[in-house]
Length: 481
Ligand code: SF4
Image (tube, rainbow, N blue to C red; front, side, top):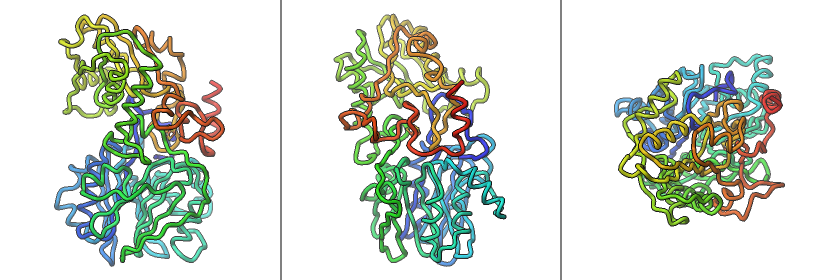
């Protein structure tokens, strides 16, 4: 995330995961494997991509703006020799889309070369940066991740691993990291495990990725999740060691990974993302049944929950909206008019299914409400008799400070309106959200443990699991507004 725009104002109407990371050590053509892995993580970040490899003597990097397939042809992969490589896909943040912010970041430290790929956001990065700059550090990027490099560089511990742990003790927020040194690879997850990271094996090589789907694509075997607060070190002989420098705080992984960010064919912390989404739809049908003729998903993200809703309610599931797969992402269109036109190019009503019917529309979330409004209007234009909107997450009332691209709080529809007013705004006959306990039941918990919740759910509840040093004043201001 870009430090200069902590409250970046995304144009789109979806929360966006900002990064996906991948690493491989012990494989021939490691960079080619990294490119394939990153391709399957493309949904986590579509604006820029980078890969760094280590040839045994030197580090090599190639980074570019665009999709993995656009930035990495065989020609670029051939410039990245070696048996160790790591890579990163990201969404650009406002003012931060320049190449200097594209990861992995690399620095030649006194202790040797150090590369870092980061998924998450450090919520005290600006405070740390001010301190580092006052002591003489010179920053090359506006990325929060660079703070870790400077903290490692200035640590007084003797080994790179100890310096790295020393640096992490000073940062707060969310981080899944894949780092490379001449000695090998270090993969780690923040003490609460807010952002995901998994480990696998392909032949003699060890691989790390944000999601298990990357292993399916490269033919690797999933071994396990990196535990919250765990550092896994792998050397060039394939020796793996696990370190737990932060004790054992209760984990708080991001529950929104299950709702929307992760691909449905991934397994997140032992749970099939697809099955969880279907279960959310079932909970929604139990909590907010509507008498209707047909259940229609807003594609693609609403599909599993709509199947669950249909199975639980006995109301037939139909594809009443067809999505074009050849349209770029909605949010890169700058103005409101262009964005609305884009919604129509992206989704089209299937009149044969919709006309004359009472429909239940299922979507994963409502952020600003602009897309929901357009889709309800589209259903009415196609002749729907009634439109009942059902949302497979609780109302998104708060911004995320952990590496997810969220509009500022005042732009979140649920932060400014109650459910009835939101239904009026999107012009639906009725609107309902799954409850927070319904969501917890869908991920396999009996209920949300109020005193010590099992997940980060701050965008629904405002209960942030870490300190927010850089954002505390601004958030208090927004909450009071
Ligand atoms: S605030 Fe929401 S999106 Fe951000 S980490 Fe927590 S649950 Fe995930």
